[in-house]
Amino acid sequence: MLLQIRNLLVISGLLLAVGTALAGEVPIGEIRSSTTLVALLGAESAANFENVVEPDEIIEWELYVPANYDPDSPAGLMVYVSPMDSGAIPARWKSVMDANNLIWIGANSSGNRVRVARRVSYALFAPAVAAGDYEIDESRVYVSGFSGGGRVASMVAPEYSRIFRGAIYICGVDFWGNRKPDQIEEVRANRYVFVTGRKDFNRDETRNVHRKYRKAGLNNLLLMDIRGMDHTIPSAEKFAEAIAFLDNEVTPPDSE
Image (tube, rainbow, N blue to C red; front, side, top):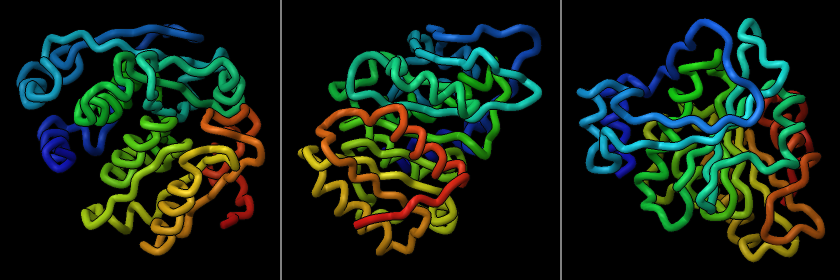
């Protein structure tokens, strides 16, 4: 299914482009937006996805745009895959978006009970949705997710390494197995953070996938094994550390 979506993205022109921001004032803060594939891609391209998402189906998005957003200083973008129905930003992470000039976007109705192909598609559409209203720095488009959402993020990030330049996998991650990404050198150039906790029931698996990434020749990796953390999202401080690593601002020690 990922290969099929890749081919469709090439057809629709979304593989290497995230869109063009519209002129004029734009909303900031917490925003709920909606669109259809027809509105996003046009009728012809939207029809290519109808086996996953109906072209006229309303897709609802949750965004968070920092108050100091400035179109003259394009923002980074954090695409989030939630295990729950809501794609809204956790309150504790708003200050992290503010401090790092990052826009947040997550699709609603994209939780663990939703088909994986649809969740992957939403993650891939998200940059084009955000870029319709905001100036986005294409070198800072990242994807993240928690638990089952982290697993989806780990399907998306290596396969679409030209779109997503980094990823944060939180308490849930899968390895690509025998299906090595086509653009493996681009995958190796990007940056990846693995977040788990000493009490996380996915801890051993997360650490194991981190080792597999390293064995595959990826060196831009950070393993955050947080003392006292269980199967939950990290604090604002720890999330900020993960983003700093993606931005290549610091190189914290990587531990096994």
